[in-house]
Image (cartoon, rainbow, N blue to C red):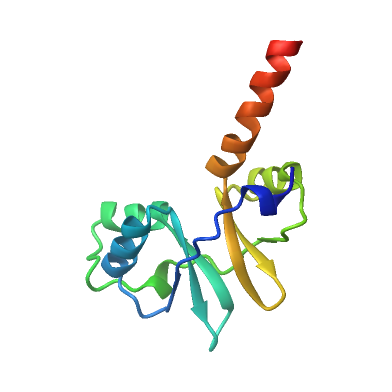
Length: 132
């Protein structure tokens, strides 16, 4: 199975000046755990996750004052739609993260998460166990 089969095509793209509260509201409304941060003046594409927001708020930072740019991961590993789920899982394990931005051409076309991979693999595992 390939990344294109598992990825979410609901890609929330925010700017670096969005506050953490704004990012959290947008992510919550879409029921997603990560947003692409697009900053053409610096790194291009980065990612902010629910964990980044949780860590900031948990350490006492004000979500109305903190901006996405201060909490964006810019050292991002991007996946291609044609990657296997195994390759994506290996990249996540090696990098210690739970989301990959999927790029095709010039921009993001999806995000694949650990949850997406498990959702795809779980039915396969049940089928193998039942026949094995």
